[in-house]
Length: 243
Image (tube, rainbow, N blue to C red):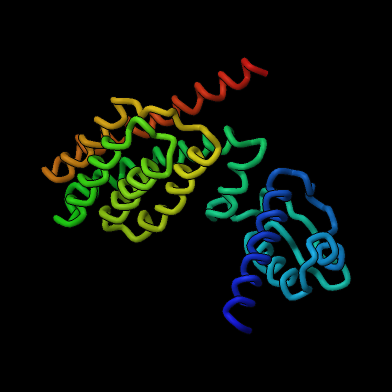
């Protein structure tokens, strides 16, 4: 397979994966629905190899079950790997977006304040510098907080924070948090101008970690997560009012 053919294959694979994954997570393909590989081949004009690989990935995520003499069946949410970044991304793109954000906010409230507390005693000088640089970047792009530039700095901050905790399990949660941040930006759930208090709190977390003040770092990080959850809830109320 040439490089061009390989790139085309990957693009087709990602397209079909995203479409099927999104349809299942959004409920367009209900639990118990039988899927025909031949129908997918026809619908997306792709090879059986592409479909086989897509089905394998969705099966690994708990969205599909493949059984001999039964075929391919859509599974219910209780079977999904709900912490997988792809599942999170698909759910944020669906009709239950706000419910997903609420659940993720609850998860973040359990892991990020703890990460901040641990980072206050474990962060390296380089990580402290990276946190400060991320806050400076957020501040410099705060008047366009719904853009990729602000998102990049915000993501760097949270990714660095979880890594600086020194706990490999918390570090593994970084992509989940980044998916939340990306999802808010992707689906226009970020304010155009960042809240001044949110930027200040990020700065407090960074400086508290640098000073080794675990209590202050934890408290500021908890306030950040709470502020984010409140902002999303307000957006949900605004949307409900418009409807």
